[in-house]
Amino acid sequence: MDEASAGLWRGGWYRFARRLHSPNQGPRPAGAQIDLIVLHSISLPPGRYGGDEVQQLFTNRLDWDADPYFAALRGLEVSAHFYVRRDGELWQFVSCDERAWHAGASAWRGRENCNDDSIGIELEGLEGDRFEPVQYETLASVCAAIAQGYPIRHIAGHEHIAPGRKADPGTGFDWLALRTQLGWDTAMFPDAVAGPLSPH
Ligand SMILES: [Zn+2]
Image (cartoon, rainbow, N blue to C red; front, top):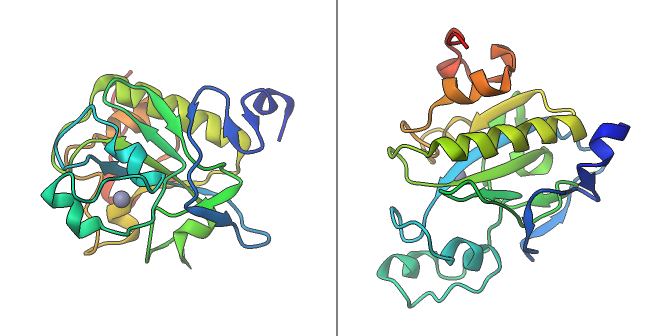
């Protein structure tokens, strides 16, 4: 980690995120090469924005009886490294040096169990729904910061690393907008979303 990124990161925690520790985490395998960012979408219940249910889920404090949808999640222990609210607010639950529980059964760039060596970012949203411009701003800035602190070479959606099982962030997510903001090479993105760069 160089001097510039050392100011952004401390022990895997990003300086500009609100911090809430999740117990749903563990050590990464020895020698894990953290080279993948995985994007997700989430809202609880689906399509309702602005509450604290996602933070509650990631800290095992969600009231399973508060909504009929939550019954299907009862006992679920999950987390992500980051969560981007509709208003662009950024939360962090797990140090990027540790293994968060966001990907499940998955494979990408020839490696399985993407939780081992990826950083997971949840966007407050719904599969098929659009995301807010300020969410792309926050997402691009945290992705750029992650790439300063870690040897990121790939970025993909949950739908790409677990096809058929997961569909987030979904068709409403504008990969081209993110790629344009980041200026990252198309080779870092899934083939399915790697079109030509839009003009700046
Ligand atoms: Zn997901």
